[in-house]
Image 1 (cartoon, rainbow, N blue to C red):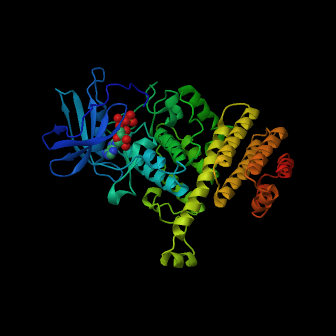
Image 2 (spheres, rainbow, N blue to C red; image 1 turned 120 degrees about the vertical axis):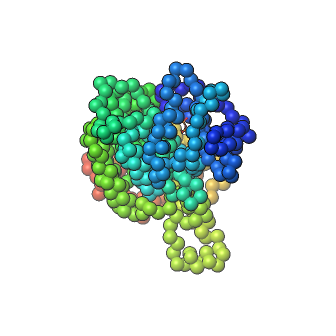
Image 3 (tube, protein in one colour; image 1 turned 90 degrees about the vertical axis):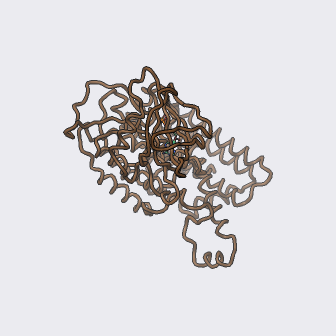
Length: 479
Ligand SMILES: Nc1ncnc2c1ncn2[C@@H]1O[C@H](COP(=O)(O)OP(=O)(O)OP(=O)(O)O)[C@@H](O)[C@H]1O
């Protein structure tokens, strides 16, 4: 949160008791800290557990942030995506306010961090994002806008509610409707509120925010859940620089918003819709849910399928063939092997994709980008070449990853219309170096990975125009 960040944690130790008229809460442990306070796991004297948010009293903050949180939780009531209100109060002498609410599970940031590739699978990302929007829709219906939507402010439920997403942290929410449920007249200018990475364009420009701004932040959140390299402005923290990149992503650099994603045309339609909305507009949430569902279908996923964290580590992510099913029943470890292979393949690709993505979005000259990419490849090569023994399976994946990296780089250069043969040659040299260091027959690789899979044919269909045609031919010759 960018606003004043002070006067935070109450610093309670496990065993500390907070007594209210309703119950006595004993601190079990700290769950997390935010800009304005801390959240503790507490047990109550009736044997239940809850989360207690504590905010230290600060003189210059006339209205505690917890007051808005309280107001929101109480006015929405017991809705699917909201934690149930338990208790609230203030401790004048000790100088803090507290809000006790239903305990939920890990935040989307934590759940993402547990994944090897640090993002959710496409299906989970879209399913989760759909629930995140449902929560926002409810909030809007009750006349509030959140103004700080981000993965850290959503969490999954516990036990039977692992498939439910909860919205958290209403500290800077705002009532955008008046008592007559009319939309308030927008103020001339407003201060920045929220988190730079997820802030809407209007927020950056100090324009009054409405429901559509939450939707814009929600869209960045959606991308953040599934983009391997993160949002294009991920490495920037200066407000105006981030605004500049967000603006560019609406124009000539739109493709950089979706690097590595499938069904980008359909995804982009959602952003186009959100961008077309004004402060006072009623959002057509159904259009967005439907679009997400359609994208899921196109990608071969079921939007309601179990999420990544619901699937146990040993469970297969692909349906086994009848033969494999039989072997599994006979007690073989084929399931584990397949899983490891699938995971491994994804990891190598994702890892490399992350490098490529930062390479593509780094704001430097093309040649510098190429050098950066080559350095990364060499580092990988050194790491692999020096490892005692590379198992053949991993070796194949590694090689595939490299070749795929070459294809992607060429495609990117072509997209940017900045193709330099010299750079491609250097890139191919690097890859050849890597292959040689690993004692791999370049020709063997070429046929195995490039031709047998019709990769080049596929690329041809999509990208074969001058000058990519020459360059691809050149790249293949040089491999
Ligand atoms: N009901 C809850 N159950 C379990 N964990 C929670 C709950 N509410 C918040 N948390 C966790 O506590 C941490 C801090 O929460 P939260 O973001 O609400 O605090 P904050 O002080 O408002 O933070 P911010 O700086 O984003 O405003 C987060 O890790 C969050 O996942």
